[in-house]
Length: 307
Ligand code: BDR
Ligand code: CA
Image 1 (cartoon, rainbow, N blue to C red):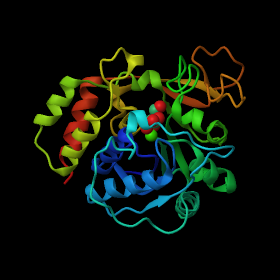
Image 2: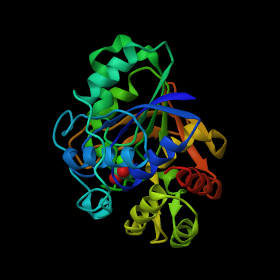
Image 3: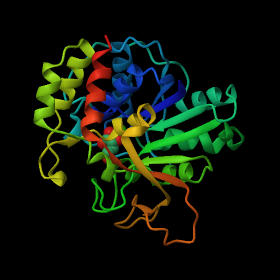
Image 4: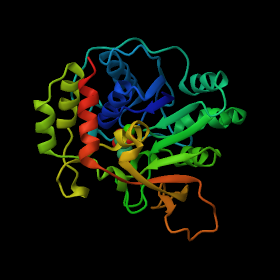
């Protein structure tokens, strides 16, 4: 199995992504690091602990940045509720591991062989940027960095920017420039992972334990996306994990990706060169399509196998 670190800000869709990762034998989750974002770090950390606890996984969970490299995070309680899990209350999880996320990522990399660790970022990229920027000699231990971030058409928090990119554009720029292979699950991909009322009915009828019931309650709490015609809401973050679990469900192409660091209306916009118009060589793999039926079947089957 691939050894991974998940850096997350749970977050309703982060919760589903975490469950998918913890339930998948293709992945060996070594560390869960937590960043502020969808709600404050106090909540995202408590949620990550609770989710890991419910899944029965004895994996260290550790808190990190509660603000962007150059500013503060702005939360999204309309999508994720005040508690970050759509009001769903889970039993408290195991205590957080001591220390801070970026140190813990570096400690893991230090003990790893070249190309051994895959970093999965499904929140603002702050913790990952801090880990990679402060000890660049360790980056060769990173096999791949898979991010749910960005968009090549329009954003979901401003007309230009996707939420994770917009919350810490400088951190995303650091990660994109780190020299390791980056894979991007952007909004155009995650729009294909649309959680509809009919799929929620299927999930409700699916046999399973506490994690499946929690996943159903959490997903049911999210309002339909106006941007996507009100037909459902996207399971953004599970797309990034899904790529590592079942790459055959995806298509992709090599692109150059950068992020707008300016203070104006394009702040946090990712500029993704799908047609090779820029002189810059590709620095990322853009996930372009996924098979929605197979993706949601995978989610249900895997989460149902958790406690
Ligand atoms: C991303 O922003 C957050 O609200 C979600 O958890 C996801 O990581 C989607 O733009
Ligand atoms: Ca997230």
